[in-house]
Structures are given as C-alpha cells and as structure tokens.
Length: 174
Ligand SMILES: [Zn+2]
Image (cartoon, rainbow, N blue to C red; front, side, top):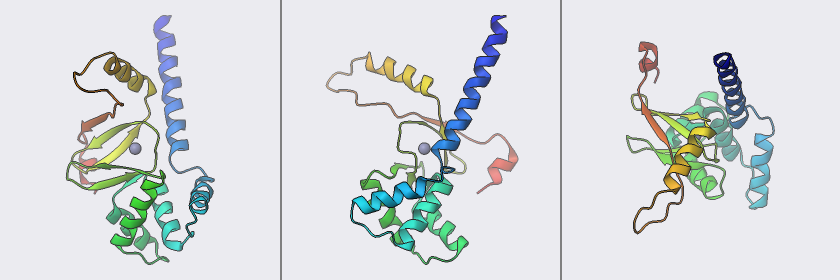
C-alpha cells in the first residue's frame, strides 16, 4: 500500500519538476516583455542586438557569448559580434537578468534562470542543465547551515553535479 503511494508521490514530483522547468525557461510568452521593462527601467534602448541576445538566452537557457553569437547568426536578421554579445550579457548580468558561472574549460556561461537551482554539468560537452529539486537543495542547505566553519559564515549553497553522457548519441552532440 505504502509502496503504491510512494510511486504516486514520485510521479507527482516528477510532473511538477517538468512543469517548473518549462515555466522557468523560455516557454513563457511574457519573458520578452519583462526584459523590455528591465531595459526601460534602466533607461536602456531595446536595440535589435539586446533583444536578439535575450531571445537566444531564452532559447538556450545556459550559453557562452560565442554560443549566443552563433545562435543569432544562424537565425539571421541581426548582425552581432562576439564582443558586443559579451558586453550585453555582462551588462544584463549586472542588472540581474542573468547569472554567470564558469565551465570546467574556463568559459563564462550565462544562465537565464536567476533563482537558486541545481546544475547537472556534462564534462564531455561542457553543458549545464537545470535540476529543479528544492528538497535536495533544502536538505543540503540545512545540513551545511547547522555546521560551523571556523572563521567563516556560510552564505549559501551552490550544487553542481558532475556527470558525463551515458549514450553514444549524447557524446556526439556538440
Ligand atoms: Zn541554470
């Protein structure tokens, strides 16, 4: 009986996580409007370059400046350079639109999800994927916060799970 309920709870949590991932990333039609209002609030013009960078970020989720530049160039329409994309990404990061993190091969990646979440880091493809697991985050956080690290005060926890693809197909994707 209990076992049956555990499966249901597991399935419910799984569905919730999928819904959260879909909402968190890009499929939110108001995401671009929110971006435009951030620009307006900071008296910045909604230039085609800034809009194209944000569109790429919404689609890619996590990306480096050259990945964003490649995405925009492949789509056509807006002309950008890697350095102009990098400038936009860092400027938007200062405004809280993105957060950044470094990959193991020392590249700066930008993340469109600015709230606390767990990352799955693929060391073969140098890719980040979001894991929405509040329960795991809370467990680790409460455990860490109950400990004392002499001379330091804990500010927070950043969980990155290191992994590599298990299938041949995944190792071949860029
Ligand atoms: Zn992320």
